[in-house]
Image (cartoon, rainbow, N blue to C red; front, side, top):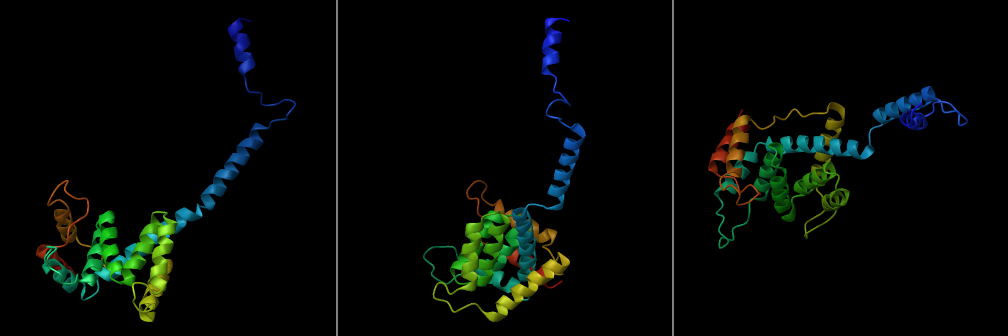
Length: 223
């Protein structure tokens, strides 16, 4: 036998020996471990997926409300100049954020939710809670849940009717996994994409809606 043959013989992994290594038993253990991993998904991943699903349902619910388009219309008519001190249409910012989320402009959605939440809209804070939970950002998620359930910014305590609606939506998601509320149409998505590319490279945040988008949303809610 050559020197190379000797080296190869020494390099073989023994399947039996003093340790009594059982290849068959090892393969069966690997199969069991793989099956267990499949049967028991990571709890954090499950929670994140459920949060994302719930957020989509809440966004559809907000976007399909009868007055959603009116609020976005008012938001579109507000001038963007710093000298103008008229208050922001907070509900319009909330609706616009939900539309941005549903059309895959997630970072912009977070920005507009933060504007609405900062003005006291608990629905926006709840959306931020779910948004961060879906991203696995548990500390941020806990912060925004606290804003939903406690007094903040000098506002009154959480509205019982609002929290009841949130619970009803959550229960529906758990039972059905979807929402009867319609998702944005292709026309709405095109209008959002247009706004996102008005000034390429100037800002990653989608600017406020304009009248074209508001009109498209009116058509959507009148279906």
